[in-house]
Image (cartoon, rainbow, N blue to C red):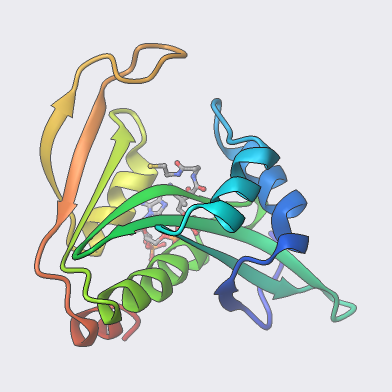
Length: 167
Ligand SMILES: CC(C)(COP(=O)(O)OP(=O)(O)OC[C@H]1O[C@@H](n2cnc3c(N)ncnc32)[C@H](O)[C@@H]1OP(=O)(O)O)[C@@H](O)C(=O)NCCC(=O)NCCS
């Protein structure tokens, strides 16, 4: 597993799109297209796009994770989150969510929603760790294999509580 050094989480920029897209392709059977990522970045005023970036042994920056949130007044929806397979279980997903949801909470977001595949235990474990709980099921939601979606919600999001996730 590559050593994580110099990890930062920052807003996605145009030049990050190809690397972010490659991570999504490696992480999802229904990845977003580069066009969709560019649309979210440039044309969706509700979208907040983040990347996690590390430095390799030569000090060169590399994008290893992405997060897309949709923010509507006091609610946010986690539209996409993924970490490159070679960099998982090093708290990068957690840091992405912490940074993105801290920023959202500072904008006034108080509730966060998402759908996750019933079989995706890794993501569900991460979300539960941050305080999300299961609120429902959308039967046969995913069009590739008709897997159920589990709906998860985080209520009463507050900036000081999000900051404590990293402690
Ligand atoms: C879900 C995902 C983003 C997690 O990213 P990650 O950087 O590996 O997760 P983290 O290292 O931040 O995990 C933080 C905590 O979540 C839980 N967790 C994460 N992955 C887990 C796994 N595979 N099994 C069990 N628990 C897991 C653990 O509690 C972990 O803390 P610990 O390592 O100290 O025990 C990553 O697995 C991924 O990209 N999956 C494919 C895309 C995807 O499923 N996206 C979510 C769609 S809803």
